[in-house]
Image 1 (cartoon, rainbow, N blue to C red):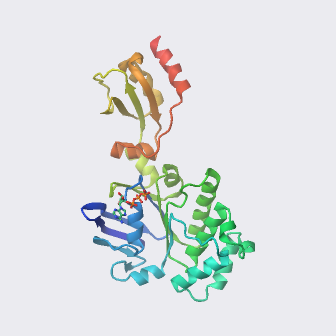
Image 2: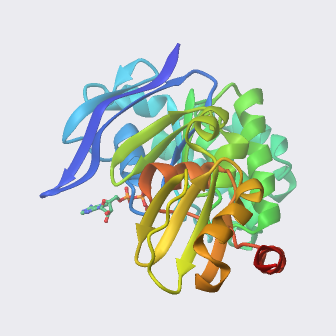
Image 3: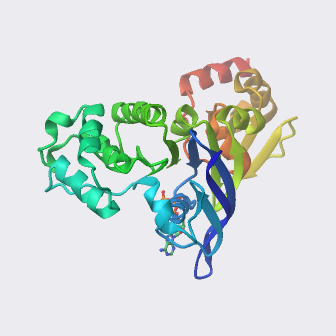
Length: 316
Ligand SMILES: Nc1ncnc2c1ncn2[C@@H]1O[C@H](COP(=O)(O)OP(=O)(O)OP(=O)(O)O)[C@@H](O)[C@H]1O
């Protein structure tokens, strides 16, 4: 059964198309990722799915209800965590929950509120002002608020943006736990490749408002992955190699099955003296993105020591 079905969902702002006829389907119980760089249209998509912004074209069926026709029914069945601040720092954790219950019209919320704070290990701080919470505790409170109305689906817009590595890892654990323990479907947006890879059962890659690929991380890496070697040339030359080469502004992007096995051949062909810099992007969702768009969200620095050792060997 599907929790979310997006059908030709489109948002235009004047002449600009922020989200362009996107289609995807999320099964009940999935952790689904919308992965894309800044400005790709992720937030706009979430806003349309949660009924905050009306689509220009298309529709979405959320928990069986059309967001266009039955936005109130949709809102009753979803939780939403924005990438912006949603807590009132001057109110206690409990008062923040109370406001959430009032805003969403959740009656008899107190028992569930207590149970949620207990589940997340912050019950003893229920009377502490949210402004005094650590980042991790704030996230737990935000998730408690989103779960207060017992939603079928939670939408999380960039849930770990700006978090340090440890808090990010705790958040991933927490998302997995609520997905299992509260049987809640999760749709999250992210521009972190690793996050999508670690957390999501399936991903749609979104770029410039369009979905350009959908599948499990494993499928996407197998279909579009491979290592990408980026070489900045000192002098522009014609390079003939049995691999896909994209040339842009004096830099070659060479897609190879495996960088370690092909680097020497490539350096020998180009000539070590003609290489200004070299970088290897190992197979990851980043290389998938690179293959699909020619651009990159995150880049891995190449190990310069290893490179120069190889270069020395190639020159001998
Ligand atoms: N209210 C608006 N009016 C005009 N343009 C908008 C509006 N909201 C968003 N946009 C534009 O739509 C595009 C998609 O924005 P959106 O916020 O959905 O992207 P995103 O993938 O969530 O990126 P980010 O992580 O930077 O928020 C951007 O170019 C943005 O400038």
